Image (cartoon, rainbow, N blue to C red; front, side):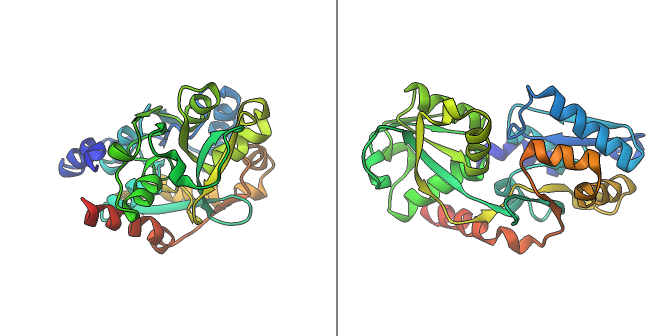
Length: 281
C-alpha cells in the first residue's frame, strides 16, 4: 500500500541537488488538488507571491502526489502544497511551512460519496461497489477509506468489487455523478468548493459519510531548506496573504480564510491511520 511513494523514497536517498540553492527565484509545487485548468487562479497566485516575496515564481504542477512529493523531498522545488499522508510518511525529511485555514480551522474531512438517489446511510452498504479513489498517496482520497476498512477487518481490494484512481478529487465526483463508479472517496474541502461552483455536478451525489477532522494538506519544504531565504519569504507571504488585497482575492477564489503556522502534531490523526494500516498489512 505504500508503494505509491516509491519515487519519493528514491528521491530522498539521493544527494541534495544544488538547484534549490542556486535557483534565482522560488519554485512552488502544486498537487492535483489545485484546479490546473483555472489559469486565472494560478496567475493571481503567482502574481501575489512574486509581489510579496520579490522573487520570480515558478508554479510546478504534476499529475500525481508522488511526483510532487519527490520534488520537494529532493529539494528540486523550494516548497510544495502536498497532502498530509506523504507529510507523515516523510516527516523526517520535511518541514512545515504553513497550513491553510478553511472555515476557521486548519482541518478538513474525507467524504464517502454516492449517487444522490441511492438509499441507505451505512458505509458497509458499499460492499461490492466499483469505487473511485483519488490517488494512492492521498489522505482523503485513499488513506481514510483504507483505514476505515482495516478497522473492520476489511481491505479495499476485497471489500469493493473493483476500484480505480482518478488522479483528481473532482474526477472522483465526476465518476460517481456519471455512474462510472457506485461510490467514491473524496476531499471534503474540494467537494464543498465544488458545491458552490459546480452545484449541478455535486448535486448528482450526496455525502454518505464524513470522516473525523484531520490536518489540512500543508505547504512543506525539505527540512534542509526550511531556513533558506526563499522558503522564509514564501512562509511570510502565505501568513500575510489575508492582510493584502491581492492575497485576499486568491484566498476568496480558493475559499480559504488564510494560512497559519502549525506543528506536526496536527497530523497525528493521519499518522494513527498510517500505523493502523501498517499493523493490518
